[in-house]
Amino acid sequence: MSVRAIKPLKETQTRILDAAEELFMQHGFEGASMRMLTAGAGVNLAAVNYHFGSKDALIEAVFRRRLDPMNAERLAALERLEQEAGGKALTAAAIIRAFIGASLRMIEDTHGGGRSFSRLLGRAYTEPAKPIRQLIGRMYAPAMERFKAAFVRAMPELPKDELVWRMHFMFGTLAYTLAATDTVQLIAGAKPEDRYDARVLEDRLVAFLGAGLLAPMPGAQPVKIAA
Amino acid sequence: MSVRAIKPLKETQTRILDAAEELFMQHGFEGASMRMLTAGAGVNLAAVNYHFGSKDALIEAVFRRRLDPMNAERLAALERLEQEAGGKALTAAAIIRAFIGASLRMIEDTHGGGRSFSRLLGRAYTEPAKPIRQLIGRMYAPAMERFKAAFVRAMPELPKDELVWRMHFMFGTLAYTLAATDTVQLIAGAKPEDRYDARVLEDRLVAFLGAGLLAPMPGAQPVKIAA
DNA sequence: CTATCATTCAAACGTTCGTTTGAAAGGAAC
DNA sequence: GTTCCTTTCAAACGAACGTTTGAATGATAG
Image (tube, rainbow over all chains, first blue to last red; front, top):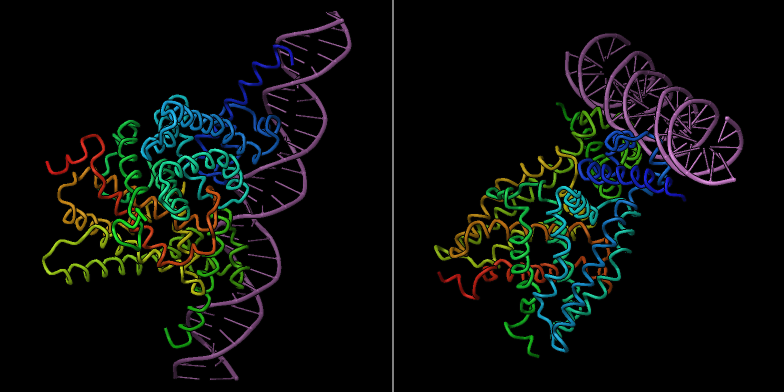
């Protein structure tokens, strides 16, 4: 662990991670072969097994590199909001913004590779392979608990069952928006060029999700909420 | 094309399609091998290539079998609504219900295999493989055009750009809800047992999505809509 | 200069992949 | 009974997969 050991080691590992991010996004985890990955990174075929141990371990490393800081940023944003508010309740819209902001800012990170990762992340939620889903679930768990509690405080009159569902829906919207920036063009008229303006996208998402989260309860009269 | 030719042929093809639906859902398109698929269907390894030509053609057949009728059902529901309404404008909620109903009813079809397919469909939207995405897009195109027009009539004051985005969000919520009924459990407290009650789920989705679609425009004051 | 050690490299490992092949099976037509 | 034709079957195809190996490489420490 001398000076020598640090620089070239990190060099190679980083190049592999960057290439993996891009190629996993393009071809999926099974579709991107070791030969593809190492060729894309400009390293020897054996380098992934040497530095990470296996392909599965590489997949985990790809997620861990971005997801841990991203969730930390989320939590920091939420705590900043709560401190600024003193004891007062936050609005649902503000909490949503804290949650999705970290994801959306990554879309704009074109040269740092964040954009590839954000799309990859959007796809990972529906990945068939169980280990990957479990990994994602584990990495998100602490942040989700915190945000759920924040939403409960912001909307005390909304039943917990319903909140859980609506957070689920919110997550789906975000995941799909991240994943599909370049994929299925289901609706004619979508303009790809403004998809990557994170600020506009954030406003649109907050408007849509905020209204959805605060919607009147499904079955009952318009204002059953006031109990 | 005698009597003989029809019965056993459909038998084998159907068994392959059923097994493929289930196994593609569990392992993904690349993860489910031909040997897995044919073993699951109880047919010879060569049967897929004989009846469908290739694995890719099988994937297409799996989607086509369910998706074409599903979109036809969607369009029929919309037209029924419009006829019932006479010349009057439909509500956004009613249109949403017509759109998502066909998908949700499939979740409840446990013995017919529809449930496997609905989850598979949810995943296909974020599939890395381009041919699959293009296939899905092509199959949805006519229905999406129709529903977009219906939403425009129902919400004439909403700018078209914004509508396209909100339909995109709506689609994401639906796709994720279909795909994730058994996958990522991001939010603690979600109860799997009531996930498959399509009627309750439909009401919840309509409440959430209806509010989102009708949300005030993002940037401006609460009632910029009235222009 | 020599010894050490993390890293890179070309080559090969055994396995599994999707597909093809040619023969066997078996009912229908005459 | 023989011919025809669709379907099934066991076996094999070459290609690509993730991983392992043992020798070269090259910078560092004594």
